[in-house]
Amino acid sequence: MNRTTLSLIAGATALAAVTGFAAVSAPDPDAAGKRTGAAATLPVERTGLLCPRPSTSDLAETTYTSFTPVTEGADDKGTAVLRSAAQQSAPDEDAEDAEGEDEKDGENASADEGSEKDDKGDKGAEDDEGGKPVLQLKEPGKPVTAEADGADAPALVGTADGRFASGWTVQQTTEVTAGTGRGLQGVACSAADTQFWFPGASTADSRTDYIHLTNPDDSAAVVDIELYGKDGELETTVGEGITVKPRSAEPVLLSTLTAEKQTDVTVHVVVRSGRVGAAVQALDDETGGDWLPASADPSGRLVLPGIPKDAKAVRLVAFTPGDADVDLKVRLAAPSGLITPAGNETLHLKGGMTAAFDLGELTRGEAGSLVLTAPDGSVPVVAAVRVLRGEEGKQESAFIPAARPVETRATALDNTAKGTTLSVTAPEGGAEIQVTASAGTKGGTPQTKTYSIKSGTTQDVAAPVPAGLKGSYALTVETQSGGPVYASRTLASTEGGVPYFTVQPLPDDRGMVAVPDASEDLSVLQR
Image (tube, rainbow, N blue to C red; front, side, top):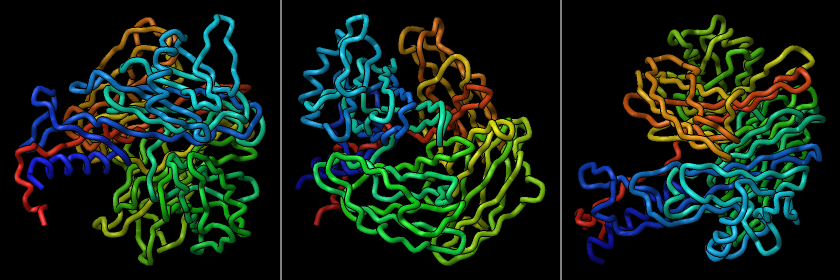
């Protein structure tokens, strides 16, 4: 095997590590990739995302939003298509067939099965047994949406390639007006993986928590679900060897896995074979509900960005795998810098046991992010906070897990002119960021602003809004210098005096990857 072939294999391996699956071709010498030594930083050419089933409520109203930022050096062709998980078929061929149809359609489509033309005569991109797209992008830089009502809205599986792959982001936002979990529920669709941690789940009687497992592949996935409570691992009856059928979504009610009723539980999802997407939907009888995304990988240093400044209660749930105990140092990155919350300077975690701490009105009217540190970073931890807003009897809840930093770029979708808050923190060093508001789904001109974030602070930045906005829009955060930077976005509205809200951390979109130059000497890989 010659050295050029080895170089391209190394590039493909790097891409696969970033996106779960990827394709790569020989780097174009004229492409606008950034050169670093012998490697070129090039746009990812293929990626995939999974969206869980939004709701079991007949009162649910769900909006799916898809977007890819304009990326220098990306291919000039490609597709980004989302389909019902249970009705995929020949994605690439269908995408080509549907692309021509979509050019005739309106900006928004219905995701309801069997939907007919609307009053304007738009056919939409309805999903049927033939696997037509629920949602398909038409151009980078402009988001598109689809809507679905009731409990029949599907879990979605999607792929993007070519010009749509780098930075492709999908969000689903659901409003439920009554019943368990009423409120605003939002989640950023994620890539398939083989391991997930969810501190902050519950098997208590007041909660109805599901772990949603979505399998995008043609073969079955086999999954183990481990639950850890305040005294260690909970005894489960059917948590091992759960089969998720090919191209299907499986919601598993956590309280059916164990007889133990515990307020705070850490869920560990381990995939024995295949890969899945996973997210916890946490629904409460009194305080609404939201999605609990996976925590960042276990680490000795965690950042939980963007706790709302008007939070009435903040409950931290943390877990350390293994047998080692740890004393976590707790700090709040506020607008003025890092401070230590009185009475919660250090929190003790026992190895293998879930611990919960009520931090009260932690932010006290100011933007804030939690920074958790283990001594010398020697003991890995996962963590999340549950946040309540509103007065007693009219409260709504949301979750913020420990987040990955925005290394290069990240995007939040479904933003509106009012009710959107972008929170950014730089806990270790000052940073400069650039924030771009995309065109709106129904019209508007992109706008860009730059911001300086002081070291150790969190800022709720006055994010730009597209000029002449119609519809919703995307906010893309790019790190220009300094860092690391962490960010989250809050959507908020008020219904019947209840402050509906949902918070999504902004992980790096992993849209760029370093590909070794074809002339690089990789003979060390030869055997």
